[in-house]
Length: 100
Image 1 (cartoon, rainbow, N blue to C red):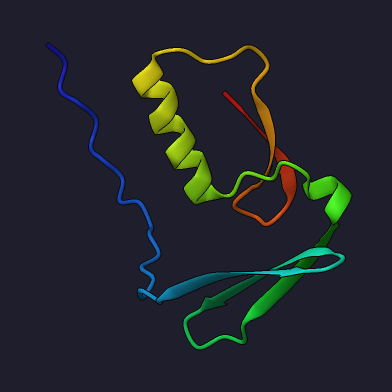
Image 2 (cartoon, rainbow, N blue to C red):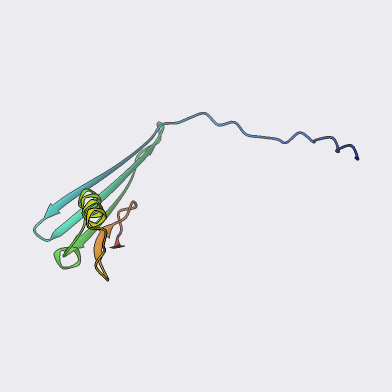
């Protein structure tokens, strides 16, 4: 067997750990809903994003807790109705769909 070539040292960058705080605020009002996302990394200024959705777009909205409950019910029944799709808010605060 041939000897393996010597390993060249690889440069690396060591970063200090910084706490990351993520918050989501959902406020329901008569026009619809406002979702505000807040991200703060270490001592940096917090970054904020806000999204507003009308009542019409939110019809049938399935929030995270309700989604978990629905998954349990479907698991107990061991069946999923065809085309089971609901409006849902993703981790970024955008309105999308959740299908089962």
